[in-house]
Image 1: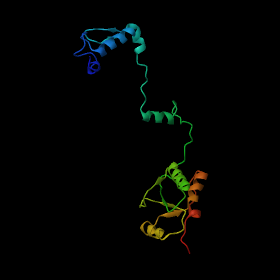
Image 2 (image 1 turned 90 degrees about the horizontal axis):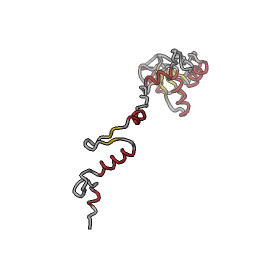
Image 3 (image 1 turned 180 degrees about the horizontal axis):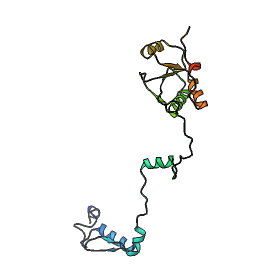
Length: 180
């Protein structure tokens, strides 16, 4: 009776009379069917001349991501991609959003400030020019003013009006003032 382990060795060792591995024999037969010549000594497949034209590499290498972005931003003649140029009236201005604010409103504030080249700071610092808050005057505002007297406390409405008019409008009508 034949041991089941003899079947699993691929016929290339102890039990095979042919002197070739089964895998090599299978590869040789498949290549022969596919029209390729197999050299029995080197066991390399050589494609027929007819197959060469079909084996040619036709893949186009992808462009780097940077050039794709540049291509989207400009046309071949250097013009922009058709998207309107956004004004930068918040350029060189730092904002800090303070207090509780509806998540949709906070998202709009973030979107408008960054879209018009403003900087949104995560923490209160001496770089901050405007504090956007929908809250009433807070004792923290007094502390912040003592550290940075040039701070301006504005309501979100000011950012909305700037967005609507597409320019920097005077902030005085939209400031948060101390309670009397």
